[in-house]
Structure formats: C-alpha cells, structure tokens
Amino acid sequence: MHSLRLFSQICERHDYHLLECQTHADHVRGVVSLKPTNSIAKVMQTIKTNASRELSITKPVWARGYLARSVGRMRIDAVRRYLDQQSKHHGYESRILPPAYRFRATQQTALRSAHASFEVSHHLVLSTRQRKGVFTSVMGQALTEYWLKVAAARDLAIDQVSFVPDHVHLIARILPKMSIEECVLLLMNNGQHYMGKHYPQVFVENGINQLWEASAYAGTCGNFTTALIKSWLRSS
Image (cartoon, rainbow, N blue to C red; front, side, top):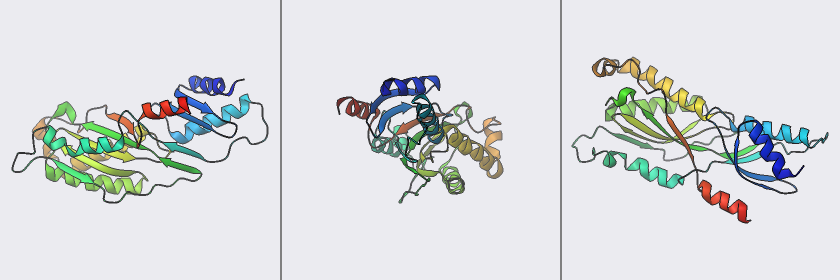
C-alpha cells in the first residue's frame, strides 16, 4: 500500500483531518487538524500503531519520540499583538480607570514530556454568561494569578492574558497528553470556583448563576501559519 494513502486512510478512520502529508524512507511529516477532544499523544500512538499493523511488520518500526508543533491561521506574534490591543479595540483605553487587565509572562514556563519535542500553543477566548460585564481590572488580575497557580499544578502554561469586562483572551501551551478541551474546562471550572468564592456579588448583580458561556473559542497558533507549512510540504 502506498505510504501516503496508508496515512490518509488511518486519519480518515479515526476522524483526524489530514491537511497535508509528506512521507520519506525514515520519517513522515504531516499537518493534521484535530478535534478539541483529541490529545496529540493519543493521536501519535494511534497513527503509529495502525501503520505498523497495516504494514505487517513485526519488529519495531517507529522511534519512540516525535516532534509536534502547532500552526494556525495566524502566527503567534500576530495573536500576541491582538491581545495587547484588546482594551483599545473595545474602547476602554481612554478611560481614567479602564476595566481591563493584561498579563504577559516575562519568561516562558518550560513544559516537558518524555520522548517528545513539542510546542503547542492555543489562542483561547472565554465569554461571560450572556456577555455580562462582570470583570473589573482588579478581578482580572486576581483571577489571572489564581489561574497561574492552577496551571503550575497541572503542567500547562499561560503565556498571555487579556481581560475586558465580558470576555478574556489567553495564549496557553499544553502537554501532548492534554486535549485542548481538557485545558479549557480546567480554566472555566476553576474560574467559576474562584469568582464564586471571592466575588459572589457579581453573580447576583448580573443576574447569572454561571460565570461563562457553555462554549469557548480555541485555535492553534505558532511561529508559522498552516498555509505556509502546507505549501512547504507540497513543494519540498
């Protein structure tokens, strides 16, 4: 079976969206779009296991490790600039005490996983219930500091945060074993817990019993765009 067709069929069977693939004698390069519930570690295990079985090779075929890098519609530096401009974008910058808060890590938290080289970044957007103007700058800072403690305990990294009253943008990095759905639920649930404990009045004042809307935005980003990597794989 042609190797490119093999990997396409494996991805199709498991509902991974293979955007581009390039096979070589000793390695495979690919761009794969995953569901929020998928973790990279599980996807890599599934692809390797199924490829070995389809090729009917009894001895080990794959090296233990892999390289994983996130790409996206926008480069990560463009996402960072977008987050920096949130207060201005929503018209709060001109106020004497703008209800906005920004955080940017001065040094990236190192994440490590055995047998994997990775850099997996996501741009996340969480909106308050009914887009109510819940957050002040003080609340945004307090919740950010709490999230940073949660992130340190759960081996994920929060690189940037931008609060305005009715939503928050984040750039987060995760381990290959974690799905982005797991990461978002962790942030949302801990945010609900913290605000309910320390600022219960905001729920009463805004007539809500939940802090967040049930859904959230999550998009990958990296040093290169998806389109650029796909083009490079096709031409190299």
